Image (cartoon, rainbow over all chains, first blue to last red; front, side, top):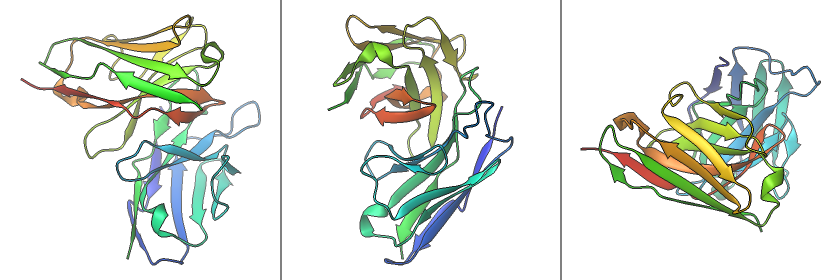
Length: 115
Length: 117
């Protein structure tokens, strides 16, 4: 099974400053179809998760352009160019490459808070 | 607008059973695979199960395999999760979610399952 590991697990950031979250997988997430199915989610306090980034670097509709994703193979990064108060929450990466047998795996989550 | 509304969560004793439902609207339900994902209190997200658009194929995480059954009724735009032999570590908020191209695009608000004596 693919293990996905995030770091850091806690990320205090000053408003207006950049933030970066790392996601590493135990196996390459490059699929035979040429796509890499690594997604990023945001979960604000008390809310359901929301898709931010799909296939490494594609921003979902409505996601501010201060969010960006990058990476390849086994190493991926979510960056926020300038953190705003509404960005507080937990961020998860999730791999969808190892399918079938259909087991998607999430990272442990990174809690972003304002200093 | 896409809406996913879960129901059926409850307090159940260890070893008990429960059936969760998810009512979908705002999209063509029978064109999409669907997931259940859970989140234990104060913990991270944990994928549970997936069913293909036509219901012909189902997949489960190892920790629920043999105990949980995912199903769907495309005529009713509904997704289900039948849970048996529930354990304390199954306690979680269970989300119904819509698949898109190996991502989970849309999540419901969740229904809480508490396994406790």
